[in-house]
Image (tube, rainbow, N blue to C red; front, side):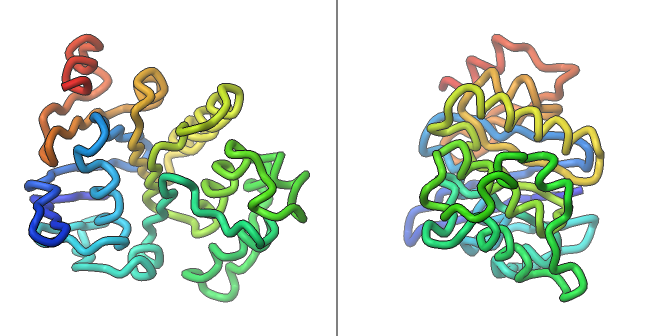
Length: 231
């Protein structure tokens, strides 16, 4: 389980996150929702060690991670798929995947066959440069690269942004498979409401850098959730 407690984050003099509490359980998808600029990406960056947080705690399986660097967070088992994908455009698909080896011991420096089972297009395009792929194919590559690290927690930041509908469906199917395997906790930042509702077991809505709504799938009221997200 990933546990975030009383997390605060600043950019200079501006406080962006105000005491965020969040839990993400193994075998479940936790959706973090809200309008633009409420702190969703900042929250994921803090968890992933991409931006230092000012206060609070990030713990994995009960162990406090302190204020980890991105490398330390990845080595602990947190994989981050950033908004905008951030693939290496001049490197091949295979080379992009192999960058996931960086936080793994040498005996794990191989690409599991299941990566190509989840994303067959990457097998077909393994020698293509990352920059030559479509937006949807790059998103699949970014998720696959994160899975190479064998994560305990998978952080997904707007995986449907700018993606064609058929690829959105495929990505949703992969997230369902990963959730149902029960080997990792998944935190999904998403503005595509129906996509998040289809996949999530827990819902957390941010407003002005603070949690304004939480619910589970069992207690979720669609209209109340939509209203909270739209504020």
